[in-house]
Image (cartoon, rainbow, N blue to C red):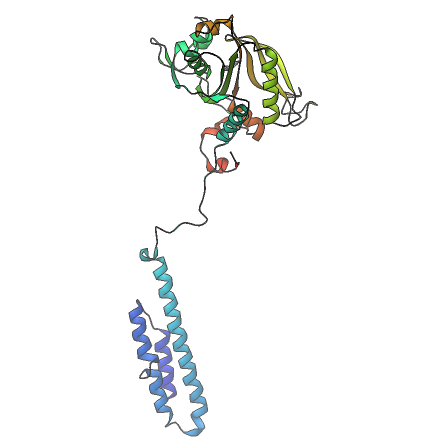
Length: 340
Ligand code: PHE
């Protein structure tokens, strides 16, 4: 009897089941009423009394071992089924559902648009592939101005003067040729320049330009709008500084700085010790530009400004390498979250 039990125990240890059906067959064979383990119970009646205790324990051990083994086989089968293609539900929502984030340049551009919209500016748009007239001619560039040079401008057809716009001032020209003042527009968009790509320069970047034309517009209007913009964009304590500059399309022209957001004027590495950070160009629209675009310079005056979105994003986020903005590396992109 003992050797029979031992033999069964060995047999059970080596059991294998490749399917649920095989497993059920094994259960019937060993553990059902008419199974091997119960057969032993029948024999048990004939066991002499003095051996009953020992053999009873062995039979119980065998029964537990058989149950454990079948349970283990059942679990192994379940795991294998989960792995299988049948168990893969391609329609199930993956959790956590990854949601995208806005591109940092979109965030900054939207903030700029939002600030100027609240001051009454509307959006204007224009083509990125432009003609020489709207980019340069209508903007009072001399025929031999170096910006037209192959060095700075990507021409798609130099003879026909078709090129990738180098600034969004072309949109200002397109607006002026279509509507008479009052004009209050901002023109956000991508621009292209023939620059070697590095951490600090790229062959394309983004601008937001603004144009305001009406009767009695003065430099003070420009200055106040720029101050309001700087304080909304950066912080309420921000100061601005206007330095004389030159653009063919504005007179007078200025370069605008904001007080350094880190040292607040004391001088640090961000502002290179000056306490100021340059953020945009601006000025009063040159009378020639008004005339060239069909607006009477005797009646109307205006101001214009233009800023680089990357430049402002750099100041807000301290991005060290401009190339990160266009490489689409999610490890960079997912760091920016906002309500805009
Ligand atoms: N168009 C200028 C630029 O690219 C920016 C600017 C716009 C300056 C309007 C003054 C007024 O760089």
